[in-house]
Length: 329
Image 1: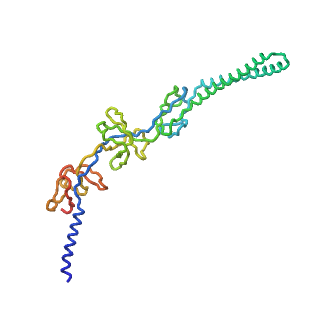
Image 2: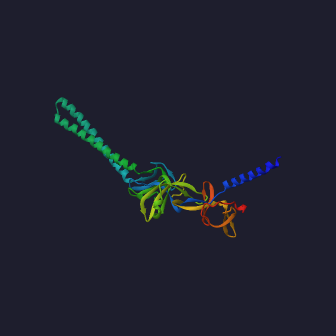
Image 3: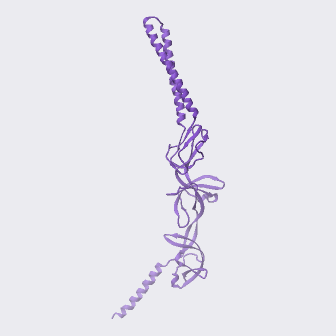
């Protein structure tokens, strides 16, 4: 009683299996691939500011060296000008002399006031003594202001870091005689990025915000094209690339970068569909009657499409062909 039913069930299973295999069959896909241009970028600091001397003199101390990290306004060197110390001594001597004169003038003014009360002197003489006291007080104030100027000049012998960052270069040593405005150290800060110089023929394909690939194959990371400068230098477009956790141990180090410079149409197949026999590459596809047919192909670059490793087919397929597992042919 069960044999008449078993036959149709087996046939139905075969049909379902055939439908499942057909639905799961892959095809050679025509896709749009990104064209990449490999260039080298240099690790640079966003801001590179020299720490300059504000006075001339002799460098008596340098507290940093290349590679050190510094905070903003940290003292990185000390410059001493012996003439400033002599000027301070001279100004202080003037203040002391004027102070003695002021004490004497005040004493004269006090005696004049006593004599005026007794009618021995005149009010005109008393006004002259009072004016002399005021003149000496003003001279002392002016001399003290001059002393403050000299003290400020001496304080400017401390060379300060203009920003927080890393010391890139220290061209001086202790004992060097320098003039005002000379560079004591080069400070790089504000973050680090990659600076690229791309041939100008690719300028139209560079868009700020585009993702790029940084590093060698197998160890690539993703960066972002942060800035494209409008000024072309020596036939090259300058661009900046931001990369998270960029290694800044060596400034001006060269890093391989792949930039997207356009798109093109291509035919790709899963990498597992490609077989190699006797030096030739084959892809097995379904023929017009469904029988497997081997196509000789020329493979190109490999890439990832939707999480699947695929290989580009340069010739041998036009796209849309149904792929057959090469183990089944």
